[in-house]
Length: 367
View (cartoon, helix red, strand yellow):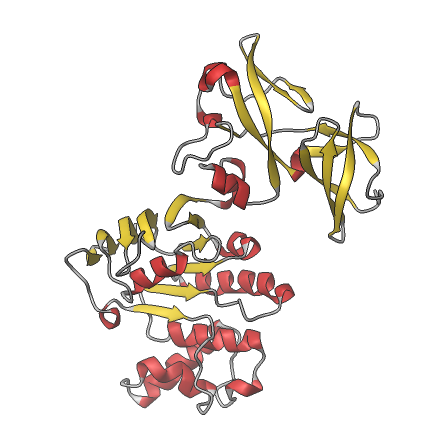
């Protein structure tokens, strides 16, 4: 692994709780990691600690074989060979693109500097833009200039702090895909911070979900969605709700009794002994619920959000539980209407009733 963070803690003077506590992750060379979470969760603080802009009060950070941060050791930011792309790009308005990109390699001979500027500008699809000024560029182009500037000194790690936050929503996901292509073409190792799940899924090889200073899970996007390690991750990623359920013996395995009826023939259902009396909370995502007019279970539409090809319906069962469902947009039902639904649950994710246990493995993984 190229980047190793082990039990990292960042504590600000006078703060009752650490800004980052017990964060552990590993990132391979050439991979892109993403830190995601709500505002104030500690993701930017952890990124700044990797850059050397914040000191650790406990734990360690290693780049390759080098210890760069611990409670006793601290390598200065300028000695870490780390490039950063900030939220506001921080381009110099009075300098053209070439001089902005060359800012970190000013000490190199002029010919070598010009060649490197041309190389990284071509990599970010801005070949020939050397003479333009920042105000002549779109927001996406300015972001790519900032990326080129960070890449010009050939850093061993790139850090990106919400680089798309100032751009239109429709542009962000496309640029995230483009940025992933640029970083992969350059063979760069990168750590990226965002609060946008679509950005995280578009760019990240590994994604870390943070909350209240803790890194709850560091995993690929598929596992975060289908195998959330904590209730917070399950609730934060995607659209879903928790409903009461009970695990009961069924043949050689178990079934789940739910407000939607029994779920049987489940390949990954936890055993009844995983919870007291088998009672648990079951995660049902919007794609676990299928609209079916012939289904015996009925639910009332209490809210609908148009998403183009589909609606996101918020539904309420007669028993009072709330569900979410993705429904093709040609099924344009009225709010207040009752429709038939049935569950199609491929991944069973359950948690203890009513409370999260940070860092605890969900019982869906208990056999």
